[in-house]
Amino acid sequence: MNPLLVGCAIAAVLAGPSLYSQYAGGGLDAMTALTRWLIVAVVCSVGAALIMNLISRYEREWEEKDAEEAREAAQAAAEAEAKRAAEAQTRRAGQNT
Image (tube, rainbow, N blue to C red; front, side, top):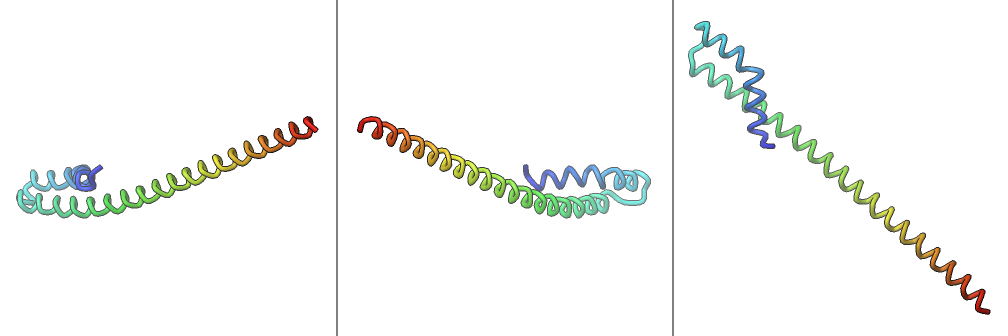
């Protein structure tokens, strides 16, 4: 997701209704209302970018942890298989003597 789009959407939901009511009531002119909405949109976009960056870092950590756990499980399975194969070979060697 694009942080700019997220920030604009949040600004439209949070600041849009109040700015529109002030504009419609004659308390603000159009340029002032749009300027204030733009300021809110920029702040919301920065906040969204920070939060999305934090989330992506946690996702990378989780993926690295999952990959490490998968490597450890595969290594443990390979070691167990090698141990079983060595025991089977030892049994066969003991039967042949």
